[in-house]
Amino acid sequence: MKAHIARNQNAGVPLALGWNLSPADRGKLEGMAPAFGMKLLLVAPADAGKTVAQLLGEVEVKAPRTLVLEPGAYPPALVLANFRDKDVDTLLDLMRQAQVTIPLKAVVTPANRNWMFADLLAHLQEEHAAFTAAKESQTV
Image (cartoon, rainbow, N blue to C red; front, top):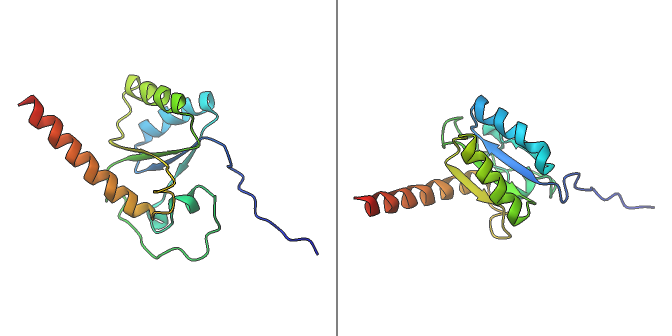
């Protein structure tokens, strides 16, 4: 008897998890995607209880925690996985040039891969608020 192993269809493929993206920003990102071989995966409010790894298709979704976020609970966010460092820099430069407004950005790490997506959003928002406050205090 052969064992059936679920394969991650996205293994090694540059992936971007998008949260609360405006139609304009989504369109710009989809336009940039072919240059990186990137897939844009939109995270629905009902999927906020899944881990980052589950959203990326790396692990099977058994029973995610039941957590549904309001669609506007957090500002737009983009979480990148399977990108080379230079491609992350290039994508961020292109996003700046195209005036894509996504305040929360992160790269998937071994540490945050197993976080529930809602927890990652909360963490990113805290970091963004602290960074913005520090930046504003330097300009005063």
